Image (cartoon, rainbow, N blue to C red; front, side, top):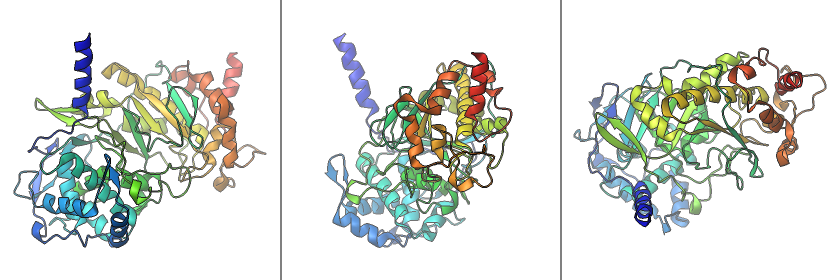
Length: 504
């Protein structure tokens, strides 16, 4: 027994060690070609990077160096590391740049942390490929400090973890076939947990929820982080700032930003990225802007995921992947078709819509979906109606995961009283109220009050409409719940209440 405990502890320790293979190949289901960079690596200068906001950021890092793994991280050490990095050849192609269609449907691209840092560092220092790419273009056009902080944080953490030679883990970007996943009408409703963000209170379920925490920073193991995307991944900010939830996630998850190197334009949802993780500390998205960056001295995420237990199997070779998953998907703007909205959710999250090579990795790392008001953020959909749509969608995903992976998928739902994209409106799930910015043209019941931050207080102590609906529906089937949502209404929970009253 003691030997077994020792083996388990040893295995856990190994899972926390960064892989240190000196060479690695770029892997993709799509053809790979190679192009030249515009500049020689020896000409790149980290003291004058492409983003014009660097001066103030550099000054802040020098004045108050951040700490990682108990050690101060000097800016000059980070700059020296990327200077040496760009002179290396991590792809083994004579320092040429890879070109592969990361945004093409029904495929994948698997790139190591070192390889991704290499292309990001060259773009950061003002280089570009001969054919151009979105990452280098976005950095050259940006004059916002958030992007500089994001890339420096990526380099600082990887310098500590990878040293001078390690390739690190793989980051795997997967694109689905862009068709809706199967919905089994007889499948049970998925498990749901809910957290009240501003108070760190568990409303129901088993979701850890201590202190101000949200799905964008919780570090929950095997929880997918949902990017509430628009038409592209990163929104209208062009990978440059913290304008909204979608835009801010590009800065806090810079590996997703760096994947735009493999595209001539912004990436598009749906896309799932395995092995992506948050590098910067942030305040929760409860307030504006969405994702305020911590002070420089504490900017690096000391709890960055370091569980390397994921594995991507290609051609008989097992590639290490970190236990972090990011997914981007948009809802349908102004669509009252709940089946279409469920279809958008399953098109990004169902295991059956991704290439077969992705399935073992999906099964290993996707156990829950962390989300906020998907569909009810900047696009001002009904918070109640979209909660039901995402729960129904997750239930369909869970049934497919149970069949293909042998385990279900749960939904972790975070309730904000001041969500950065649409403050106070999500409180409608606690006590019905109107979205203040849409009250003049939303289909709302007569006499409804307007939402305020205090409307979320109705959820406290296991009370409120969200808790009532969860209790009423958690033992139902997809078809049973879906049958009550034939007509859109802003106060969708009332349909559920009327149905439950009939059943009783």
